[in-house]
Amino acid sequence: MAVRELRYLGDPVLTTPADPVTHFDRKLKALVDDLMDTVLLPGRAGLAAPQIGVGLRVFSYNVGGLHGYVVNPHLVDLSEETQEGPEGCLSVPELWFPTRRAAEATVKGVDVKNKPISVTGTKELARCLQHEVDHLDGKLYLDRLDPEVRREAMRKARESRWFWRGNGQ
Image 1 (cartoon, one colour):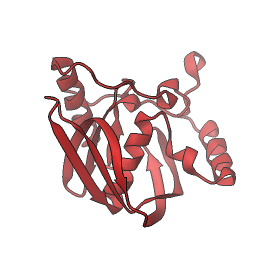
Image 2 (cartoon, rainbow, N blue to C red):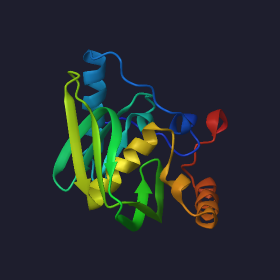
Image 3 (tube, one colour):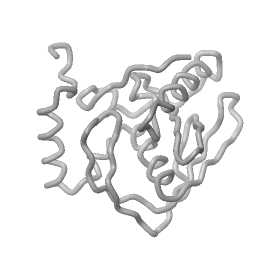
Image 4 (cartoon, rainbow, N blue to C red):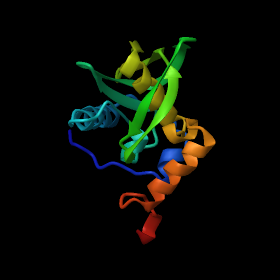
């Protein structure tokens, strides 16, 4: 179990759809343990495996005293009611932009033993569930921004010290 280093905007792992988990073994348990340890640091609500460089469909969350994970998650229910508020991302640090999300969301998946689990949330947890499933689909919250706001966000990201520039960083 360990706190893992984060990957940042520009790293191709963040825009590549994650593969489904097919092996429910000690390696998966270790990955989940690392995700759980890493998401517990202050200021963190959710963490998807690609954000630590692992291209598998797994995420952890830590919102409002609820702490858990989902393997092979998929969104099964989104409310018609929406919420709009500032959204940020560990892989896009220091940048927050208004993002529209469903006000309530339900994710279904499995645990490390391949047993079904379901997580339903409102407000911040709903936002987190949608945000993390987006990561597993190779999308960032920036992709959901209005085009003008997205251009501003990308400009600020490229000017940042953390932006991933490949081998020539």
